[in-house]
Length: 128
Image (cartoon, rainbow, N blue to C red; front, top):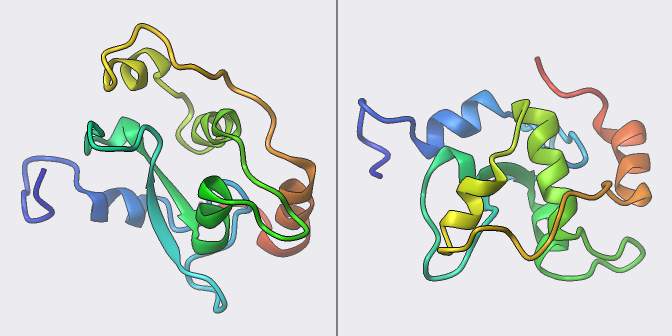
């Protein structure tokens, strides 16, 4: 999918509709972090479709791929939970099909408490 295509929903469209981190709710217009598009199902076979996208701040995006000192990591199942919170649903079957599977090797799980505390202290409520 090209970002210049008017006929399809683009990465830029998704990021404009999600101007905050889906995990910690850090707003895009607040200094100190920047927003990044995370592919829920990644790797060489990943598909560039809105069902597979989630907006994360650079800190939370790093925590999905690595452990953060004093915070740990964000499990893949917690990303599914965050996707459902911000988009109203998560199509697990569609995500699994991106890897030619019937199911994902993980299920939804709660967002870790440290990230939720950070959400309450620093991120606030998502916009709108």
